[in-house]
Length: 584
Image 1 (spheres, rainbow, N blue to C red):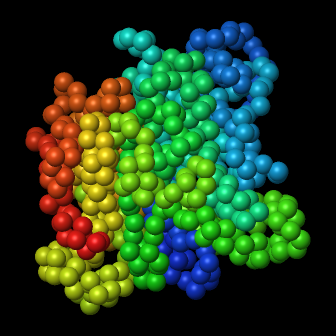
Image 2 (cartoon, rainbow, N blue to C red):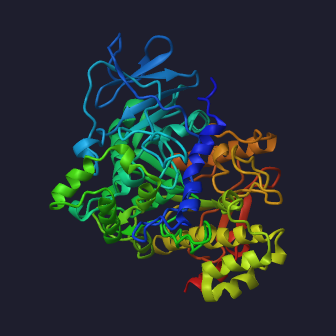
Image 3 (cartoon, rainbow, N blue to C red):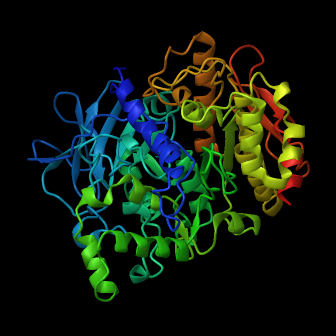
């Protein structure tokens, strides 16, 4: 097997910048009150160099199934035309395949339409450009392109043991503001797990989640992109040796929130057969001040009317106010990418809207009322999720004393702050900052994810349902994160990513015990994709979540070392009874 595509530390810093910008800008008075609050889910991917895909003349390419095509490359016929990938020995990659037409010009802020067919053989050996991203502070140019609706396919070289391979479609995180499918090198789940892995770009920020009265109840364009990619997978999976009737949608952070949306979206029916949600659920939310003092409370999805109000404010700021709706939209579509891709405007549109055909109601409401697709689900969190967020913001917003901690509690919980402090006294934690991170981890990630699992189990008690908690206290720190003395990151948000993908530079490599855990995790994930059950003969048994014991759910703790993988009562360990009472 050849080495994966290289990624650098600078790439990780760029991927983390959406969160840093959210922390800084949301606390500034420059953000208008009408703007939709920024999501609190950071990018955790490592960008690759983005090179546009191009078409090349046909050589001796044969039609149909995969076949060798000179210099170790491989050609496959998709619905739109032939693509030439790159062989890496044990696996082959096909990068930069268009799944929809470029959403530019008159197609900006419209639902995706199919990509045009092409003649000859399209070069699919390099990733396409990423979608326009949250701007890097101090950068002179926009990062990414509006012509970005491409996906990447990783295929194992070995013949499958039997039949078609399962297909795993990855939706990246990044706060709906950053990230790219090409940030994730998928050769390990492909080769070790025998799965075909597809990673997807989708529109971000103002380009993906803009709303305006002139657009009516248009769907969230970024989520519509994801469904278009799933339709492409359904049409083309068999051409790569995959089973179009066995598609697992998996993602982390904003990617997991996206999957929650698709679980409750009528227009996603039949597009996937299993779901894995990592560090994001239908009930995820943040209290006021979670990212930094002065930041608003966060819900991941917004009413259509709120997004339209933000769109009217954006039109006013951009000088597009004359005439009727058609004239205003024409003016907005005539704006250059650089005028739209500002930090303020991008952050004003990073919550998918509900109240439309794709999302008729808020996913949380749909889930808790039983309106979701019945299919196997695996969902989980990391033991120290919020240490990522708190650690990124400590330099600007330190939490040094119990007074600092108490002030943050008061902003977040108001009259309930004394009760929260009594349950999480600073003296019971190594530092006030770590106490604050524990409060937010339990309240915003662990307990909301467990509540999501309980809601699924209550409405579909026979559904295959599995929960996990990644809990490696010594997980390698992602390169580029700030070092805060006395503030270890532990198993923070995104720290499970190097255990599933090889494209994450860390301050040190995985040790032997962590590599063994990585092997077990990849086995669990890919077997779930294959069968709807993560259990494998060579890994500790993983019990299913059951509605019969809603307050003591046995989630699988994933940690290295002997006995590191075992069922735990995360509900009790993270004080979820306390948070359940507080939310009522």
